[in-house]
Image (cartoon, rainbow, N blue to C red; front, side, top):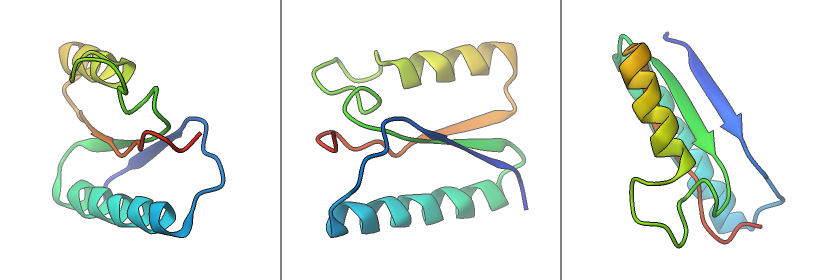
Amino acid sequence: MRDVLLVLRSFPVLSSAAAWLRVALLCTALIAAAASAKTTILILGDSLSAEYGLPRGSGWVQLATDRLQKEAAKYNVVNASISGET
């Protein structure tokens, strides 16, 4: 199995539905990581990570993804952040 790196940012107590959604996203990322030759970085965060109020693709996760792709294309980044979980 490939490496999976989890990044937790402001990971508060979740409601039941949100918790199950995150578990499903985590499982999806783990399956994708097993099928990929790249290390997967899974981002779990709040509205800052989910780009709430920003144009899509302009938040810190996308900026970090772009930089990783330029410097070392061996990473796959999955943003599983959910806005409103603060």
